[in-house]
Length: 248
Image (cartoon, rainbow, N blue to C red):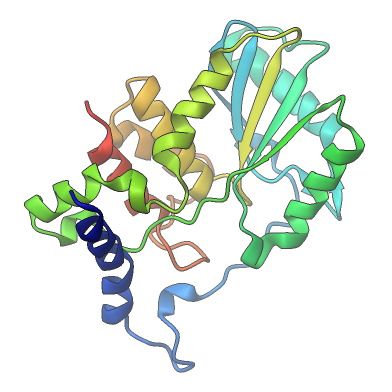
């Protein structure tokens, strides 16, 4: 599509649901209601997603508490998970790559905790800030020809840059270095945005179906991946957009 049409499609994706949203008494869409922040690291939400040689990809929730990054506890939990889920031994000396999906608008302090920890401990790993925002509209709300055109042009409008970042994550995982690399992908609860990112990875590189990716996301904790996150966007529908974008 020519650039003007791409811009029009992107604008349509983001503005149409705002026009249709039912306002709450304060004049904001009801979907923007916030949820209580996570206050503790939850080990049972940590799971192995993939491995390549001596490198590993994990998912989970925010590994910090009271302004402290929980490096030792995270290492212990990933060690247990790797043994339980893959019957493999966690590397004694490794490089942690913290893939942080939080956004600056509402989670600046949590981002800062992790970013500053890695600045002080560069020998321990690397901090990657890849904010994810979900999406506003369900692909099913469009006629098929519009839906297909929007999905094909997803790299031009997806705010989380998932069409490029998921292949980058896969490439990084497959690149062996002087020491094992351990990737830890997380948002706050380890379910919605993390489910979107890891579900996308699993569909694109592990051959998982959309139904199976959704099933995994829905069973990380005792609730389904949210149709609307606290940021007013949907990680569920963005996962659906990714499903339509992937050339199966």
